[in-house]
Image (tube, rainbow, N blue to C red):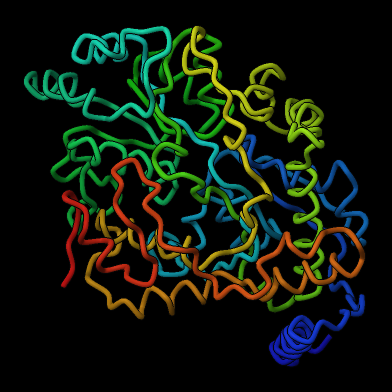
Length: 456
């Protein structure tokens, strides 16, 4: 194929599909796969499920793709391998394509046409910290305390550490992870300053910090907590439930508490790869949409019918490699905060419903606001910059092309896709502090917080 013709082909493909969607015409299955053998990366977390299920249930194979799914040791290595071409694409942190494209850390243009899930994270503290929180907030001294729990309950612990010239040590998985931003959001909403990224400290984010945040790979979180090297962490499943199962920690919040139905992971590829393999990209997204739909399928009573099978698949050593019983908890709609505190959380992991797999511009803009709030974006940017930037990264046209083909094949229903969306969700106050988020006003949102950068 002539590489010089590829951008024009993509434009023609998108134009044809958009026209057909608008007119109600059928999209002909004209995909001509440029590359049929792919290697996709993931980190050992339950929200890698769409990639794993697309392989195990034959959805990739249905698109003519032979896919190898390969675990990566950490998020940086995963991103580097996508950039270098060692991986064709990967399960990524939502912030990774954004940070790479704007040049924070590794510079590379990464795009995403698919959001893998919403929710799915938790914030866990050690047993000793939990006991101190209970002392300072007696209402927590209950087999089933009221949630959400504010970070203000940590204030006494934080203050005592600072008085001895120490800081509470908490971990997240990567500087541009949802976990970093959610942990910072939770702490700041409770009046605890999590620290700023500055030119003097571009990687650590510790300037003015009342606690110290550091990076730990997800599977290592429980062991690092048990060793006493950290006293808390924010991570995805199954590593919060693992702390409860091992009796070493107590989850005090989920990211559903911090921001209801918040975006979590995306499927990312390099722009160069997407430009070279437009049909292959669409085929991959088709398979992932089907996998997400399978994961969220319910019976007539609303019970998730495929999650136990998914948990068994994910528990294999070549995938997440955690105990089936631990993975099953959150994947089947339950979450243990303590052994005495098992709660129904049917939306702890969402892979398809609520139009969650669509690549929303407003999701990407939220991450940009957090990067600016905490100093990873070092200078003020105009509101238009936020919109322009996210459009370089999020590719709903590819998603809609894939979805229209699936609709015509009878594999999804029309109401499951936001066909006419402009990419912006409605304004929401579904945050732990009740602050209103309007993605069309990123500067106003940024300035509405007490702690963090403010812009003119």
